[in-house]
Length: 479
View 1 (tube, rainbow, N blue to C red):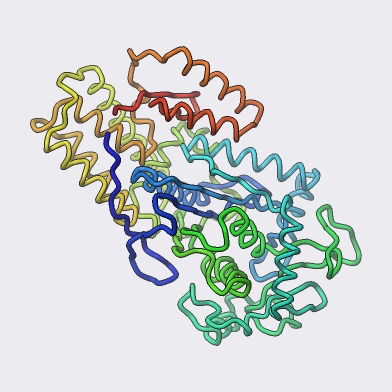
View 2 (cartoon, rainbow, N blue to C red):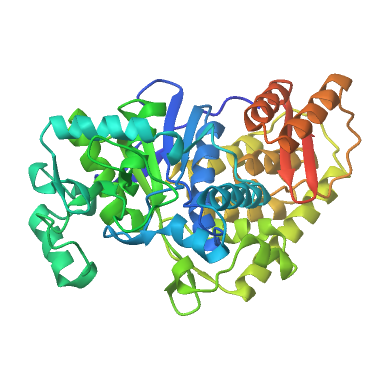
């Protein structure tokens, strides 16, 4: 298959319009995605966002870009309220389970990646943990202090949002309106010693009456970093001061991402990323946002316990545009599973009857271009799925081989394991079999860097490896 390379259009929250994607460096994309706070299991609402980000990465790679994807693990500093109040979620999790914060972080980070693999979400190029970058954060706060953007009150070092021109521009509101919105009750609990309601904590002091499990010395006193400083520092450390794309859920727009931009602009004079993409909520029942704080949650394991393939949930997510709310019901998940099973059965049937040459007809190219156009139009996955079903029902204009090859191409973006039921007659070369064994050994040892490197070696050999709940799947890429 030829290298596609089409024009990609993305909706940029920062400019509030659909824009042609132009990378900073030709052929390469640097992308940062906000990762989980590992104090409990990630729920399916969280994973809707991670699936959207995975689709974005796959679309970029489908277009021939080399993507450097960085994601953080928040294992300190994320308080129970985004308004810089309450307890650290990690400390709360440790108390709940009577374990150390470090044990909680390791356990739930591992569970997060297990669930990610079940959903065929590609592992980021770099995964960075907040607790491994405390010195970097302290140095960054010192830089903000030298530039006059900070002040100290009783519970920590704060960023003075009034000193930054255009604070809050990601929200579409100016400084005054943003503060008025907070006063109206959006965030009613706050430290009265703050100069402005929008000011946020960069370094929080440890309580005087008890010792925290996670705390560090700093020039301002013993404490721990604020949540917002983590992503700014780690994104810029691994992607540079200015990179291409920053992603997250829409709940990150008014506070977390707004404050990330503020810190970066104060330090460098410009936002850290050119394009800001945000996924809408998954809602459950009567338009209630899935939230861990609400009590019971639905996890990937819950879905599996109910007898569903995790990739049925991925299929369900593809049926709605990432910027539109998606209502979750068990009935809608069942419909998604039925559709996915039907698609796989079509692929199996095609694979058993691959008559025809490998030459490409004009109709083949037409379907391919339509698919490329759909996914490149701000990740229009519902349109891409609709095209897939038209292709499946196509009876006259394409050979079985052409239809099969197109579906395999489409699945590079969908990642639905459409060829799961195909009985392979293809044989792997011995060196490829050995590489797959070595990769499994690396994964068991949690040596993700080595495992990812081997996956790329196999890809260079034309062998695509996918990790599924049923084990490792491979296919030989049609060229």
